[in-house]
Length: 196
Length: 385
Image (cartoon, rainbow over all chains, first blue to last red; front, side):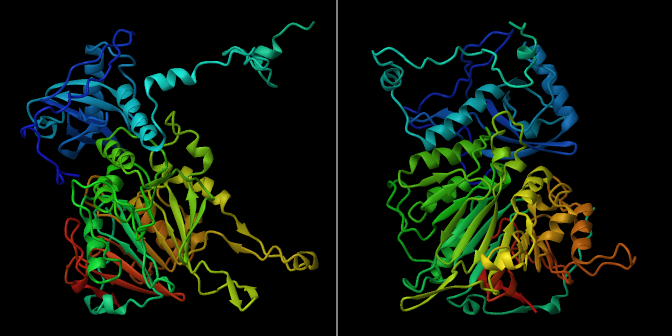
């Protein structure tokens, strides 16, 4: 949707406005630290892929409100040729040492785009001008948080800790250790066991 | 490129749309929002309260649905409950919108959903979405609004879930639970996460006279299938979840009043899924549903995806008007009762949003001539004759 009834980025922020969202980005196979982003960054997600076109929904970089929601200003859509977008992303992911740099683009993949202008205005020869960082994992986590935060009660840290405290009584029904092979029929690990 | 048949202007007659709606009529609006969905179902009047309710299914643009609700209120077709000011909290809703459905989180279906949930919060009781978390800004905005509203009920229904609202019953046809359980790994595509609905009116099946009660099977029940953006995988589950039931006249069947037969998919109206993309429909599905009226929300070959796809148009035509063996040409789409929000008449005037006034197995179709960004004007209504 092209700029529907949303404030334009660059409008003066009210005093005390919470900070911009800083996603964690993995690099070189390690869990990354929070990456500072803000004005001049755009939040882009592959909303749809049809035939040879990827449609991105692009928004001004979100900030967190007092309740922890990500809040977005201008939202619009921009179609891109799929091949050109894929090459640009592969190149940028490799340059940023991000995992699975050449993975195929999927609906729901998310990126930050650093640019002085709207990315859509900068398409020259069907490629992005500006730097791109893959933030899919962090964005998916935020979408999950948005859903579970909306539909179920939220816990304080103390409450979450208390819910993990076990009763003092001995555990008569211990859980099997995680990762243990389950003796299901057809499980090759089970079949390979030596007969006793 | 799709082939679009222009409707003769002479078949469209100006008329009093609002005046034509009687208390026992149900009205289905398929708003013109281009390649996107925004639908509203105005339920028949409740004889006990003399009030109506409305169900909203998707809001692909910011303004279209709130405008339509405001216009229905101004014509006394929905209760005139004062809206809270923007900075006011969440009042207890009046229930005039008992349900809002976000069929799936693509922008062309939820791009205006935050505004619907916010501006109509004094009316909305319940909200459904498939539970497919999609990181676009519109989804995060929508869920923040769900979280902020302390009165809003929320559910993620799957195939088979039924809900009775007034004299209407909704049956969720998709997603199948097998598809929903694969959302997290993205093993299910976002279109196949769509909530498709079957709507039936009247839902009443019991007639009472004093203490006497009788079960009826009303042959005038009106049904709609609202296909969201479900694609082949979703329809494949749906075709098995909602089978064609053979009738049995054996003594054993009669003895227990069972096996009365019927096709759980057959419907009077079909809103084609995914804007008539080439994966949004298949021949067997259309033959099973066998709609009297087929509706498509799409541009006429423009937009991002150039919907409707000509392959799907041919599938629909062949299902409704089989010519493959005879070799003759299909009738025109409007003659086959196939209508697009992007239709034009033979004066090249856009026909825009569609309304169906439905009751007692009768369907009356109206057009409003609005563009995708225009407000739907009841004064511009023209009835198909």
